[in-house]
Image 1 (cartoon, one colour):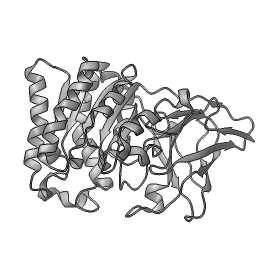
Image 2 (cartoon, helix red, strand yellow; image 1 turned 90 degrees about the horizontal axis):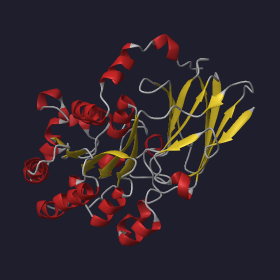
Image 3 (cartoon, one colour; image 1 turned 120 degrees about the horizontal axis):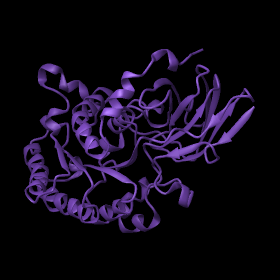
Length: 360
């Protein structure tokens, strides 16, 4: 039997800022936690963490040990503490299954998965709200090949925002809108969503600028955390200007909140975001984009009320509709970066029989 820890070659970890420099499971360094104390408790909560490898093994076992494990309001173990597995080369991959702790006393849990003998990528999506202590991947066939995962086609999108950004209430780690876009476009990312705590602090903008050499796109959607329109007015454009000053050619995508129709001041907050976008355009900035949150969940006749858990936080349907609304703009952005034609050609050449996931 071959066994690898997630920190060992050829296994690779995606989604943790500076992981291979600091070897720390955190998305905010101590310096930022000191500058923004309200985010200290979320620093070691790293949504969007993925573990990848390539193999022709027909079976493999994933064992995960959590450093933390606690109940969360509205979040069952399948949502907050689960691991989801996708098999198949990106951007086409198959859902192989999800597993989670059997109870809140079991920090170590495992599952065996089965696939075809095709040499292909496997991606593990780790729990969203817990700190991970260890991930171990075992292959019962000693002759199976295990290699480094295929690099993502697009470098990192950095996404900053609220609980919706963080993926709160998606049923599995794969189903929030950023994870969906990542799979559709074969795009790596850092998720800097902070539930109830993203307030457009300039210190956060400066931290995001430390990723300038690897950041391909910045997505910006924290208005649901702004306590009132005046607060958003005073923070939204200044935050963008800090990003833009350090990244003059970086595509920036502005989003407004998708639960638009439930809040009396949604018109005001949306217009604040739109003004940031329009002023940038008027100043000659051709690398800014805007998606109106009111369009994301669909119309009343399309049952938009089915898109949230509690009137605010998207469920899986809401996240899917968000991703679908953002997708055409993403295609424009990526066309300006690298072109989308090759991506579309890849889909045309896809053969389902090559990537069959076998379940037992």
